Image (cartoon, rainbow, N blue to C red; front, top):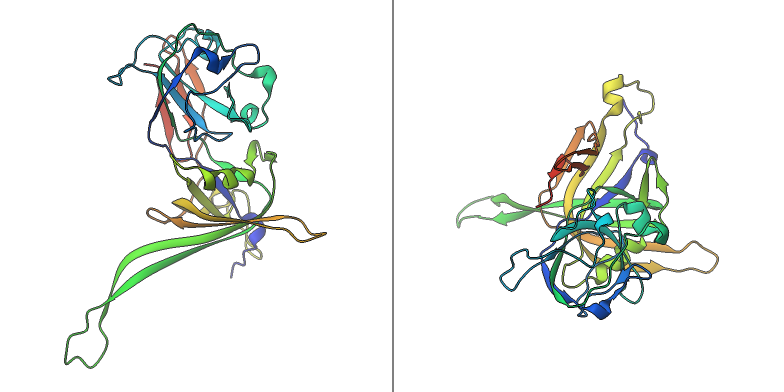
Length: 305
């Protein structure tokens, strides 16, 4: 019999794609001296670590001109385009800086922030969140994931026993982690601080959705009293589902660590996998600068328009 300990588990989070939001950027919104900008309205729904697709469009939603408040160094081929994808750092006043790497964005590494340029006239832009790679949830104490199936009663008059049939499946759960605001290392990739989920719960226009990978067994872990062959040892055992945050609580007790307790419900299928984790690949191929980037399940091929 194999006995598993919970120490090989954990959770990874990924942000799903969002709908498109329309706004404007004006000359006064860009401070090129510190590579910081804001949008012209108060509907900003971005949080630090988001991977954002920004486009310059006309009134008919067609790409037009170039995104000239971002310098040419913001693109891999040093050529400005009407659109681009970057990771963002959002400060307490709603100011935004753009970064190429997620780790630099969450740490607000200003020395490598993408350079911005002043503009002489405002124009219409759109922004939307695109799905990023999975990140471990920092300082996780434990998690629960409940799966429930509704049952409908179809007993007929005269039946001697209750007749029931299974219907829809739903899920819910809770995350418990030490409150943390700074990203740390999780293997070779950064951890998502619990502060991310606190901010996620407050996001209005785009919503508090996330993709959850709930790990029961990480790669290279083995059960007690049982030896696994090298292939089985590499496999991960995990639930995969889309979720929405319903409540965030902060538990504070004097002289005790501060806990974050996040409750959620699932919004789609709940799948259980026991398989090899995805291989990650990052590659740039001139002259079209095709980029293969990691996304939790599969490889995403993107080309500039």
